[in-house]
Amino acid sequence: MSNFLYKARNGLAEVQTGELSAKNRTELAALLKQKKLILISAEERKEKKEIKLPFLKPRVGLVDKMLFTRNLAVMLRSGLAFSRALSILSEQTKSKYFAEVLRNVQGDVEKGAALADSLEKYPKVFNQLFVSMVRVGDTGGNLEEVLDLLAVQLKKDHELTSKVRGAMMYPCVILVAMGGIGILMMAFVFPKLLGMFTESGKELPFATKVLVFLSNTLVSYGIYLFIAFVAFLYFFVKSIKTTAGKKVFDTFMLKVPVIGPIITKVNVARFCRTVSSMITSGVSIVQALDTVSGTLGNYAYSASAKDACLKVQKGVNLSEVIAEYGKLYPSMMIHMIEVGEETGSVEGTMKQVAEYYEEEVDQFTSNLSSVIEPILMLIMGGAVGFFAIALIQPMYGIMETM
Image 1 (cartoon, one colour):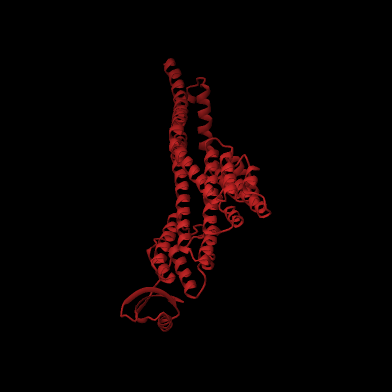
Image 2 (cartoon, helix red, strand yellow):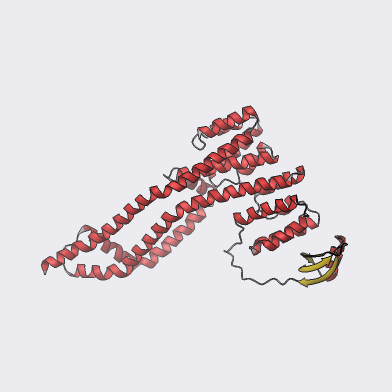
């Protein structure tokens, strides 16, 4: 099969362009004839061969999926056919991998496959939430409205992720820079100065002895320490990908100051937003809970959603199940869901809870810099003070003997 860029004419003598997969130009002309189009010209699209490294897996970002979802909703609402809409969107996206996925989806749709079935073939691009909502929208005849909900969901996920990453980026950069500068100084600058101190024969202060030990260790065993550090990172990443490792790590992260509250607010907001969107689109609450359990990043929240799915299926109210996990879910959320169940508007109350905690994340991340900056200043001041004392004290001792 080859991809052809074609020009064709319809019954009104209007020229249309597009891309279609076919074995040859004859089959292309036949496929276009089925669409009541007459082929004018066709050019085989030559794919550039790229070197693919096994550890560089192609990914599609949230922004790409959000734009695709919103634009697809607009195109379908304007009366554009599925195939034509997917063709246009595949040409507009900047991601080569995503464009290839959309062309494949277009080919499946043209052969009569349902959109959800075609999207389901690419779980790393379209997760269970995306596929389930599209399937419900396609079946219920309100796909445009469901796509609008999905676009909002993806936008909120992107905003939450961006805010948390932005808040944590500054301290991480500062700490990595400090560590890098400190290692370089101890490996290349301090050995010359410290050698002069040790040759003087004077008793060195405790801070200087510590600095001498660290510098000598780094110079003598630096390569081994680096290998050990890389090995540690490798096995650490491998371990947290296992069920037991992820459970321990995620539970620990919930107890870490500053980071724990952010994880709680993000997962609560995502839980409520996702369940609300799915119920609004026509998905049952049981299916919504089953789907959301696979979208939450933290193991504890994912496990609680799975448990809620099983118990709600047996007739237990969602608020009662959530109340069993009082350490994970705030009491305000539990009371709001309880009110929603009594009034028959669970999706509405959960949307309000999601908006509240999304605002909480926004405020928390905005104020985080004012909390972290003094701590970073203290760490930097302590490091500079330690190096200053370790270097200046022995200098005074040498000057006194002169």
